Image (cartoon, rainbow, N blue to C red; front, side, top):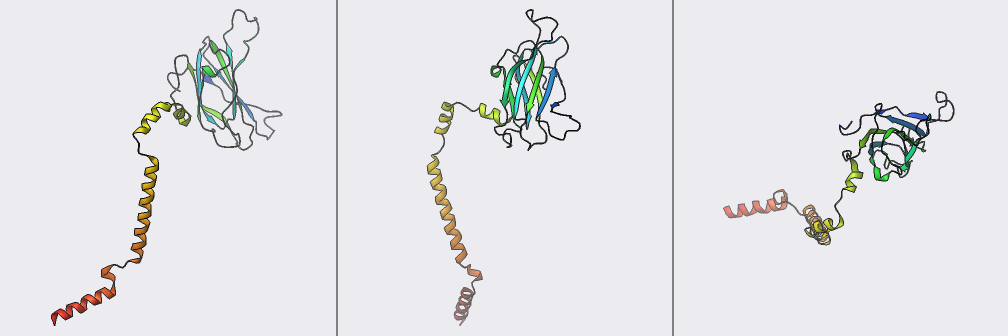
Length: 220
């Protein structure tokens, strides 16, 4: 766990399945992962980061510290802060199946202050994958962000269009480069063709015979 992430307990995924889990052979399409914090501790959540493992959709719900206006005697209500976030463009395909994902506070549809528990609801409707879960799960408080990983982060860190244009000014014209490469390739093909038809002097028997006759004539 990242030293800047919040200490927490991540419980094992619990399958949600119709029928008897022990006897029913059908693969569950929903798992629930509960995250709890040490007693009497609440967290202002800024980011939830993880590595996906074949989870197609994710819903995140939170419990927050009881407010004076909440009815007494009842546990705090669960509030949805991320609803059916798509993690795989197509649940039947590999794309997005093992991406690093960061869910920021700006993406959440409710406040994430004074959080006492988090519930992650994982869904995978495709029967293609035997297992699905979330790995390297981290809860980061306000002011902290996870180390950026993966291709998705690289895309987000690309320089703005103006910087790319300035970089391109120092590069050669791609059309000119392409034309020169084609010319070099054509020249190489011509040289190969000439080498395959030409004979090497010392292995040419006719040339060797001519040299020998010239030596005999010079001696006489």
